[in-house]
Length: 432
Ligand code: UTP
Image 1 (cartoon, rainbow, N blue to C red):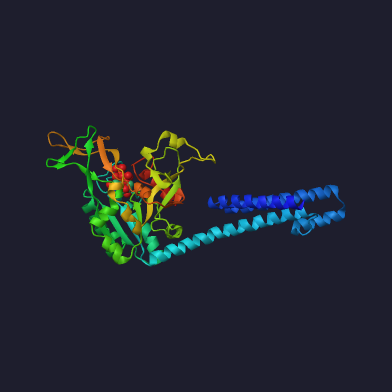
Image 2 (tube, rainbow, N blue to C red; image 1 turned 90 degrees about the vertical axis):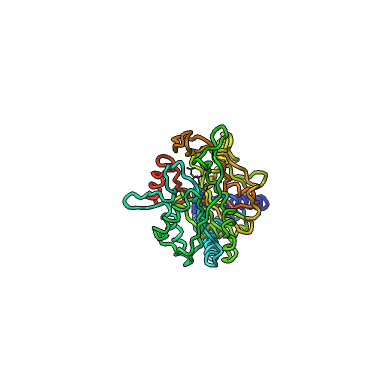
C-alpha cells in the first residue's frame, strides 16, 4: 500500500510539474492554481461524502478536520495524496510568482544594458512602400484621424517611452535608400525629430540593386540610368559599416542593436524585457514573434532548419507547411516574425552579404517607355532582387523567439485598406 501510494504520488507530482511548467510558459499560471485548488477540493468533498454516507458521526467530525487541514487523513495513502495535492499547489504558486519575478529580472537586465549605452535602435526605412502607393517615404504617411500623426512620429514616440523609462537617449540609426534619403532627413528636420535628441540620430543609405522586367531585361528609370531599387533590408549591417558607423558602435560600446521595420506602429522598441530575455538566454539574436492569425497570413514563420534557427518568408511558405500540425494539434509553423530583432553586435561579422540568398520579389517598377515618358505601373510588372534580414537569423546559430501579444504589438501598415493597412492599424491604435 505504502509503495503504491509513493509511486502514485511521485507520478502525480512529476506530471503536475510538467503540466504547470507548460501552462506557465503559455501564461496560464492562474488557471493552474485554480485547477489545483478545484481538484483538491473535489477530492476532499469526495472523501467527506464517503465518510458522511458510510461512517459514524465521530468520523464526520474527523472528516471536517480533514477538509479544513488535512490533518486527520484516515490512512496513509490518503495522507500521501493529500500531501501531493498541497505540494502541487505550492509548486504552482511558486512558479506563478516566479514567472513575474523572471519578468522583473529580464527588465532589470534590459534597463541596465540600455543605461550603460550597450543598446542601439535601428529603423529600417529604406523600403519603397510600393503597396501603400505613396510617393513619399512610408514613414511620412499621415495615419492621424483628427490630427496629424505620421508613422515616423509614432515610431519615435514609442522609443521615447523607453528614453523616459531609462533616462537614457538611446542611439538611433535610420537606414534610408538613395530614393528616399533626402526626403526622410528633411522630414525629421522639419518636425524637429519628433522630440528626439537630434545628436543621437544617425542616417545612412543602403545599397541599390537593378530591377528587371519579366523577361529579365533591365528597365530604365531615366535615359542614362537603369532602374534600381533598394537591395533589401538585410543590407543594413554592411551599409552601416560602409557609412563608417562601425566606429560609432565601437566608440559608444554598443553591444546590441534592435532592428525594426518602419511600418509597425504599435511595436515596442528597445523593450527592456525583450533585451533582458535575449541577453539572459545567451543567444546571438532575439526575434519578436506573434501567433499567426491565419495559416496564410503574410508573415515570415520561425522554425528550425537543419537544427539551426530559420525564418521562411511568407511567399515561400508552401501549402503543406501552412497546413502541417505538430503533436499537440497546433499549426507546426505557428509563430510569425514581426520584423523586430535584437542582434548581438559581435556576431554580425559572421553574416556576410555573399552568404545570404537573393529573393526575387514581384513589384511595381516605375520606368520610362520607348519614347522616354515616365510610367508608373498599376500592377506588378517585374522583379526586384532583395536580401532579407530574416535570412541573417539562419547564419547566426542561436535565436530566442520571444512571443508578444499581437493585439498590443503588431499593427503593420503595408496597404491603404484591408489587411495590414492604415485602417487596420488605426483600429488597433484605438484599442491600445
Ligand atoms: P517591406 O517588405 O514591407 O517592403 O519592408 P517595402 O519596400 O517597405 O514595401 P512594399 O513591399 O514595396 O510595399 C519591411 C521593412 O523593411 C524595410 C522597409 O522600409 C520596412 O521597414 N526595407 C525593405 C528596407 O529598409 N530596405 C529594403 O530594401 C526593403
